Amino acid sequence: MKIVDINAAEKPRRRLKALDYIDTLGFIIEEWRVKCVEPGSEEYDAVYWALRALGCRRIALGRGCYVSLDALGVYDDFEEKPRGEVYYSVLDMLERGRPTPLVRLRWRPTRGVRVWAKLEWFNPLSLSVKDRPAFHIVREEGLGKGDYVGDASSSNFAAALSALGALLGFKARLYLPASTGKLGKIASLLYGAEVVVDESAKATTDLLKRVVADASRLGFTHVNQFTNDLNFESHIKGTAREIDYQSRIAGFNVAGVAGSLGTSGHMAAVAFYFTKKSRSSVDVVLAQPAEGSIIPGLRRIETGMLWINLLDIDYNLYDVTLSEALETAEEVARSDGILVSPSGGAALAAIRRHAERGLASGDYVVVIPDTGYKYLDLFESWKEGGGLREGESTHSS
Ligand code: PLP
Image (cartoon, rainbow, N blue to C red; front, top):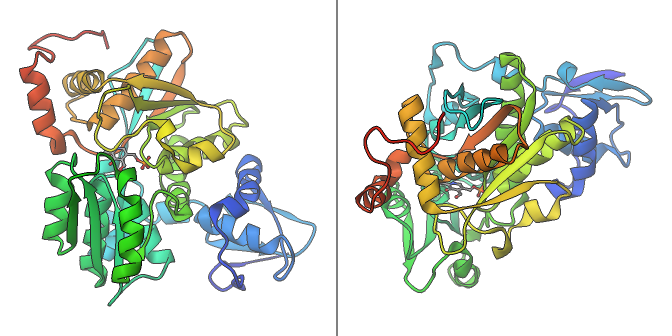
């Protein structure tokens, strides 16, 4: 058996998509060890891409042996986060500046549940979870100087892709629905992207036809975050693996994971990872906007999202209204002094519903996709309509 640097190992001729090596990936996470493989063998390609997705530095070559993921450097990149957080460029920060923080909240939905919040606004480009798929897609598809790249977005992905365009020298073109706030449009323009706000589109999904047609007419690469497996893969390598590493350091067992759904990229990956790691004992809690509620960045599951529907994952799905999401965000603002996005508030509200049904206990990790500071207008109009008043809280924490 020989353990070699994965970058020096023979690269398979074909780049497998996540859904093509998903069974191997699931098996490796579940076992936390991997079979030695020989280049050119049937298993090699799937193992190679699964280990890459898991951020492993090394691969084990040979036959008839098994090696632990720890021996393959599965967490090495996190261990090497630069001392003093000094970076030599923004690109360097994107490459080495992980993980984002995991913080235990004082806010608790019930006595028996502790909540750890993963603060995704610590991603530097869009101050959101969307830096991850944008960067991974651009990197893995080799997009760079002189390229022309486009997609539809509700806001955060637009900001992230536009920023990468500025950083790496490609031209970005973003399509936003009319309902989008200022963020996606203004931030993308400031980063130098072309921005199309489609007045007839209510949601990002309404833009797809136009983006596909424009891509062939104008000649840009349509990266399609909604179906591009690199979106899902970026969260296996990033969000999910980071939570795993951080819970190990903090010394707790992940009893449940919670979050919200847009493309389903981040929560499908987190749910898949921990379902495998825990051999299906983890509790997956998801929030979607209640019928008639608009929560920025989120969609209802039946509007069509790939990964969460395709993977065999058990989850508990809760309909959350916008006011419930904002109210929960305000509770956390008052208990912990941090302002989470409405989508983060929705995820926390879903945990509370789950706990109130007596279904939750132990340590839950909730992914907070971005900061509430981007949505002050929304909080303001909710406040003007009644909101929570000074000194008032509807739930004990
Ligand atoms: N929350 C916010 C604020 C978002 O912008 C998004 C996606 O754009 C999400 C949640 C959902 O993330 P995902 O697309 O990974 O499901």
